[in-house]
Image (tube, rainbow, N blue to C red):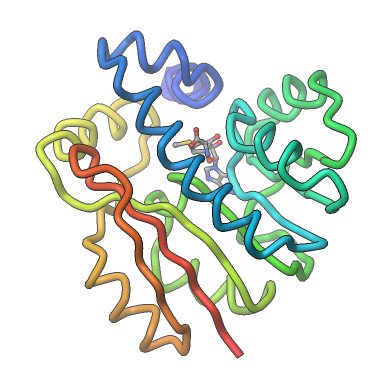
Length: 198
Ligand SMILES: C[S@@+](CC[C@H](N)C(=O)[O-])C[C@H]1O[C@@H](n2cnc3c(N)ncnc32)[C@H](O)[C@@H]1O
């Protein structure tokens, strides 16, 4: 049962927006993707890893923004991979893989609203093995995210590790990263973190 709910939840983000009856969910994703793309265009990485692409909402934008880059997009959901491959994005390879088991080094790792599912310290340690620069979007505690959290737990069995920007900065700095934080959406309390390590 949990498997079915989780698959529905992750594989049909537009359906998720309808289920929630919260159309702004689409705008939240659009705002986050726009911020990431702006930064990616500035950095122009030759190799890029996207973690947890789901319906390839961000991947399609990355593919257009970086036509000459090699993009690897991973997601644990085999169904997401099957669907994304049908998009035939020329510079993207889609793989059904777990971030924590993925091997490879990249000029840039990006991920939109996925790292809230992870233990933050473990994920930061894994990132530091994968390259020097990383861009993530995360969410803090707001009425919206506090409402979303039990729903997400019910649907997927996974908790959402909401984290305030300054808490995340402290943790990332302790683990050796330089941290730049940009706010994205005050209702969702989303923000973008740009992590650099030596
Ligand atoms: C909340 S969705 C976000 C999807 C997309 N980035 C977006 O913003 O619309 C989380 C996605 O991360 C994937 N995921 C969860 N844990 C993962 C892991 N350990 N490695 C790779 N992907 C993972 C899920 O299958 C799901 O597609």
